[in-house]
Length: 49
Length: 269
Image (cartoon, rainbow over all chains, first blue to last red; front, side, top):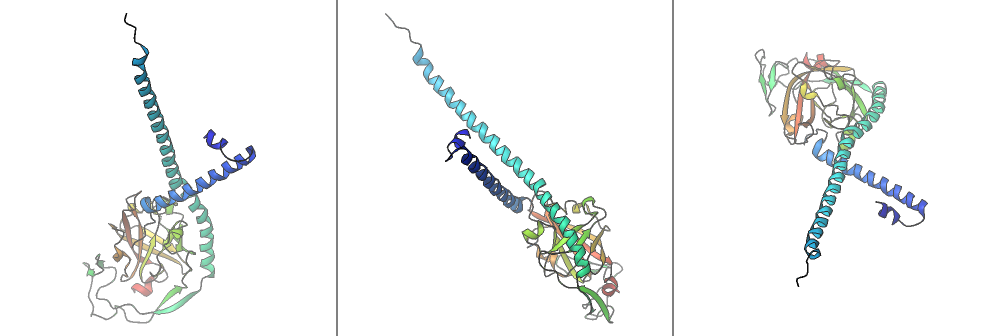
């Protein structure tokens, strides 16, 4: 993790900004993946047809 | 002279131990990451979706209240469909055929039970996604206060509230009004409807007024069994949700019949 962070381009401030943005993007993507799995396997809303 | 041999024997064992340590470390970290992802999934499904749903419910309840005031309600003439059975005294089979009950009486085929001019109160059809009703089940804790019902059963609709299936009558009207809802996620409005038993009351507030239904039957079907949404004689409310809990494999269906409300007399008199 530390190596990944230090490998990001630019000065320290830019590294932090990129890391925060990438983390947020990953969390949002994960949210949609969770939502898709939940809707298709756990609870589709009970619709018929 | 024989020279002592020591170091060459230990080398393979040391390499093997290092390899094992690396395997254990990879397996350990993979387990931790997978565990965190699964925990995240559970938290997202059970708590985050419910939080979003509750935010929407607060807005939708206000929207429904506004709809009750602003919706256009008109009186229309109602001609009951031909029947051979006294409504409320027979049973409806899964294929839609009506079997007279013990107290059921037959009439001439094709003749309405009570020919005469009747009027129904009808509201304009709500737009897709709009809250237009509130469903309340006094015997179920989370539905005791009411849950907003929106028009449409698309995924985005059901994330906000229970959804009324388009092309089925609105609650309080003759036929079979179908409402679907989540059972375990997005607020899980229908979490406990499996506990309903025949005789339990279901109330639905609409712009017309409050319609009271009585549970007649609770069954489990496959998701493709469309017959449960087909029109029925009289006025019915059909609730559908996933079954079993935490699975979308089957559907739990609650059939309830109108027993009171502004249109009850026109439909059943």
